[in-house]
Image 1 (cartoon, rainbow, N blue to C red):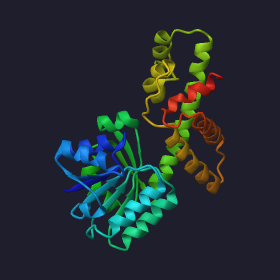
Image 2: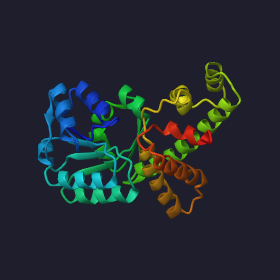
Image 3: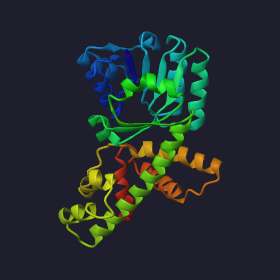
Image 4: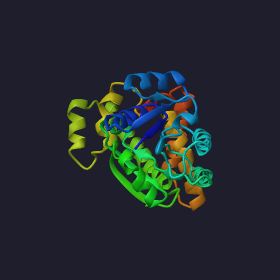
Amino acid sequence: MKVGFIGLGAMGAPMARHLHGAGLLTAVGNRTQAKADALAAELGVRAARSAANFADCDVVALCVSLDADVLENVAALAEVLRPGAVVVDHSTVAVETARRCRALLAAHDIAFLDAPVSGGVEGARNGKLSVMAGGDAAALEKARPAIECYAARIAHMGDTGAGQATKAVNQVLVAGINEAVCEGLALAEKLGLDPQRLLPTLMAGAAGNWFLDKRGATMLRDEFAPGFKCAHMLKDLRIVHNIAQASGARARVAELALADYAELIERGLGEADTSALIVLKRGG
């Protein structure tokens, strides 16, 4: 199997490295060419300069930021990939974007999977991501050897768009947990509690969660190196809000988080980790 990977950010680069470790990676691409050139030189694979450089790939995975980026890449790949190839999109985008991608590729007999991921930078580095896939089951089985390189769990959620719908639900939970953890730890600071005693005590009980475990200590030290940027969370929450409105569901948690992350970006913290939310919770 020959696999291409487009989008070499904090998530994409380690995912591509796992593919290389399994001997599957053929070509890498990125909007900033220098980043693709550097990784390609390091791993001894092809640095793509256009979609044509992926023409011999059986599977091409995407992990980019915006719906427009996904659509642009998919449109270009549709013109060069062979019939029977599979495009796997690990980005977080709108359900309708996923369906447009399927239609673009189906016209050329190329399969499409919307397969957003969860697990953060740590999950990508450790090859332990949770992948929620929508699309044809046979296409997922064809792409599975590639996806397994960086996934701890691969779930087929249904037809095209089901992966993105699942990610929307995931982001509601993530946003709510972030709100609670940051608010709780801001209160702990006000009360003068010792973080070295507090954090393991919280993790040992019902309050334990991934965000508290991975970000609790760093946010209390005002360290906000991004695992997942505030700007990306805001983008995801806008997608969630639109999905919730269309479905008629109440989305008060998402609406609160949407307002908070918009404020963080106004304060110039768009590139900071989502744990920078504690800055607002402190009342500063």
